[in-house]
Image (cartoon, rainbow, N blue to C red):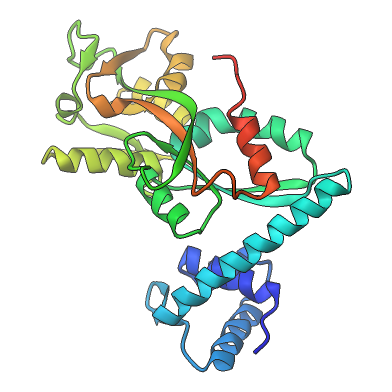
Amino acid sequence: MRFDLVDLRLFLHVVDTGSITAGSRLSHLALASASARIRGMEDALGVPLLDRLRGGVKPTKAGLAVAHHARLVLQQIEHMQGEIADYAGGLAGRVRLLSNTAAITDYLPQALAAFLNSHPAIDVDLEERPSHLIVSQLLAQAAELGIVADSADVSSLESRPFRRDRLVLIAPRSTGFGRLRQVAFAQALAHDFVGLSEDSALQQHLALQAERLGLHMRTRIRLRSFEAVCRMVEAGVGVAVVPAIAAEGHAGAGTLRVLKLSDDWADRQLLICARSFEQLSLPALRLVEALCAPHKE
C-alpha cells in the first residue's frame, strides 16, 4: 500500500469540498487523473472511501479514518519543513486559516498582506466558514487556525483576541425607524433585507438568529460584497446587517442610516483559535503572532 503526498492532499480536498471535481481543481489535477487516484486508494485499501451521491461525495467511515491520518501526516511534514527552513535561516510552509465573513472582508486583507510580504516563503490557504463550523473543523484537525466570533463555543480550543467587531443595521433614510438610534434584530425582521450570498458565514449566522426568534428574514437580493450591499440599501431596496467598519464608509453621504443593534450577539470579539498554540507549525505560529500584534483601530 503506497500513497504519495499528492494522493493524500487530493483526498483531503475532495473530503473538504464534498466534490471530486472541486478537489481535483484545488489539487491542480485533471478530473480523470483525480478519479483514478481515488479509485487507486480504494483498491489498495480494499474498502470504499467515498459514497458517491447525486450532489457530490461524502466520506465513508473508512474515508473519515483515512482523512484523519492524512491530515496528521501532512501537518507533520509542514512542521518538519518549517523547522528545517528555520534552521537554514528562512521560514517556509503553508497555513490553512478558516475565518468568518467579517474578518475576511474587513480585517484580514491588510493584516495578511503585511504578513505575506514579510514572509515570502509562507503561503496561506484562507477559506470562509461560519464560526460554529470553524470550531468543529479545528477540532477535527481540518485546519490549524480559525477566526471566529465569541458567540461560538470555543471552550475546547485555545483562543486569543483578534479584533472587536460590532454589527449594525443599515437602512435607507426613508425606512420607518423614526428617530431611533438603536433597534432589536426582531424589529428589523419586519423589513425586507439585502443580504450576502447564502454561502456567506455572516448570512448563515443571521439566518440562525432569525430562526431562534421564530421569525423569517425575507431577503430580496443577495450580493457578494458589503460595498454592494450598502449601495443597494442606499437605493431603497431594503435593510441590511453589516459590520460597523463596512457601514462607516457609506454613512457620510447622508443617504444611509446606521442603527445600533441591541442584541448581545451584535457586539462581539473576534478570536483567533487553535487546538493548541504550542503545537502549531512554525509558519502558523508566526501568523498568529502577526495577527495578534498591536494595531491601529
